[in-house]
Amino acid sequence: MNQTHGGGSEWTAEGTPGAVDWSAEDMVVVSNRQPFRHDYDEDGEVVVDRPTGGLTAGLSAAVRDSGGTWVAWGDGTADRDVVDENDCVSVPPEADEGDGYTLRRVWLSDEQVEQYYEGFANQVLWPLCHSTMSLVRDDPAYWERYAEVNELFADAVADHARPGGVVWLQDYHFGVAPGLLRDRIPDSTALAQFWHIPWPSWDVFRTCPNGEEVLAGLLGNDLLGFHVPRYCENFVECVEESLDEARVDRERGRIVYDGEVTTLGAFPMGVPVDDIRERASADEARDAAAAFLDEKGVDENNKVVLGVDRLDYTKGIPERLDALERLFDDQPDLRGEVTYVQLGTESRSNIPAYQDLQERVQQRVDEVNERFATDDWTPVVYTTEYVTNETLYGLYRRADVGFVTPLRDGMNLVAQEYVAAQGDGDGVLVLSDQAGAFDYLGEYAVGVTPQDATDTAEGLADALRMAPPERRWRTRALQRRVEANDIDTWMRTAFGAIQAVERRTDAPVGASTSDAGESES
Ligand code: ADQ
Image (cartoon, rainbow, N blue to C red):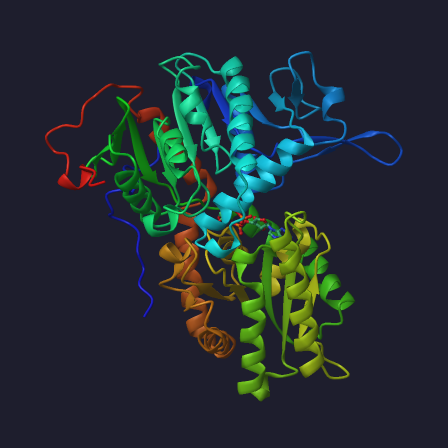
């Protein structure tokens, strides 16, 4: 049923990643969220929130080594009080001169946050790109603020971009900035962007308000990266349908628009595999997970099914609870034997769709527990509390099943973290066929269709009853995949492609251009 895709496509990044000399480039990384945030604590002291994710840590190291700058929204309560007259601060705070890098902060008003971030980015682009059109909420002010904030970022970036350097934008908050940057940075500066979420089909994207402007803006990039070839293909389809003047060269993975060339590529993002494996195998992680489960009243002999997500409607958490209910209905012998642990981090709580989701998850957890709980067994343990990385990695390691069932997901790093944390363990990954990660891991995971409670319940039962030899070979095969494509490989492949890209060439599409490149609209 479930096919795997991937390798060999015309959008697959070419070549093996080599050693990249970050110091050879002046790099400017641009993201909505900042890598370091300064806040006042209750005693009025400044405290620093540090990067924990693999991507932020990897990009931080690259910016540091290149002697570059990171540009991001300053959203901390003490952020304004620690920057210099150019809105810059050196991070990490304890770094000696030369060991840190510059963080340039962009300031947003409450209205800008509401209309750019919570508005166009998270109530238009996010639901559209995840093909949940019914959740799109538009307001003309959203686009105005989105364009305005992109302009603020473009101005800030222009202050730091250097000839021969690289500007690397992250994600869907910057659909306009690349087009603006074309005129504001030196021609010899490479301009690249990685789009972390799916790109939908034209049939969905055509409903995007100001969609044409977003496409044109993104074609300001010299290189535009997605996780999987399918998203590149969808993007090209949208360009062909929407921008008459654009010409597509599928063979070379390029689009020429407005006299400039944009190269597209699929760069599947990975996780810091070695680091996760080492930390998940440590006694501290095992003890932290045991203490967590003990505190929640989970019997140490029970099988544990683990979900780890931001509380986002794309992650399919209520649907997962439906499948669990189906499992306990259909397979009563598993009652009392299996505990489903769901970690959910609150996210975008000012947006009504997210408030609704939070309520719905709590309601479904309560319903499943009310139906099946006994005096000494609670089927679902659900918490929104913060857990340390030690506890998280320990839980990955302890869990018999990693339950990763998004309705749609650009990649999904949790699936890869779960596999990486297994070490010599043999936890089974149950994975949605709607996650980008499925293209790389679907062959050895237990694939499920997340909207289908029966299919998902059957997949979960298969995973729970799988014999140890099969568990082991599947785990080893999955581990080889995540090892071959860890975060370091992603950084080097993506950065290698940025360095190799043609910059601002006014090259016409050559004779090899496919006919499909001629727009029909
Ligand atoms: P996200 O939608 O945030 O990312 P994901 O890829 O799963 O989704 O990454 C989430 C990260 O946050 C993981 O590293 C995970 O460990 C951590 N996390 C989530 N919930 C947590 C919890 N409750 N406690 C502790 N840690 C938690 C977006 C796209 C994805 C894409 C990534 C990277 O939506 O499709 O994979 O960017 O490009």
